[in-house]
Image (cartoon, rainbow, N blue to C red; front, side, top):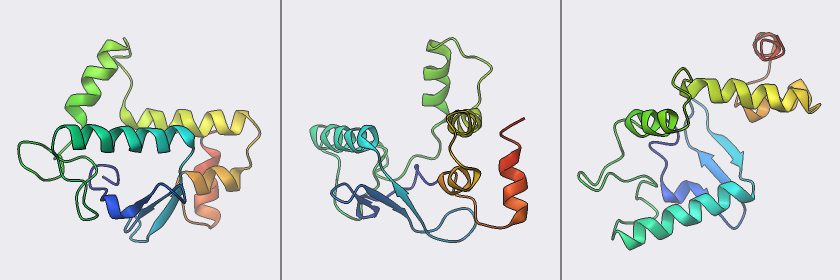
Length: 134
């Protein structure tokens, strides 16, 4: 949901920060953007401008051109991409698990993985993060 309803005012490409005003745990969250993410946001903005979609601070990053609102879902696009990659059994959430596993395999601390995944601190979340190791 964070991506689907992102507004341009929440994406600061100069500082390389995407601020999620309210995540699923009810708190705001700041996501550091790497070079690929910044390049992607710039490409999204160029595409929106080419399609004459709004890119005002109050505009959705992903505006449905038919409704002018945020998309209801990304699943249709996900299924096309997934099927073209011949990954029929992969769910969107599996990407999150893979991300966490790759970080852990590269020696990133559990605290950093927990932070990057947007988990709040505490023993319960540490236990949850430990699931990625198994």
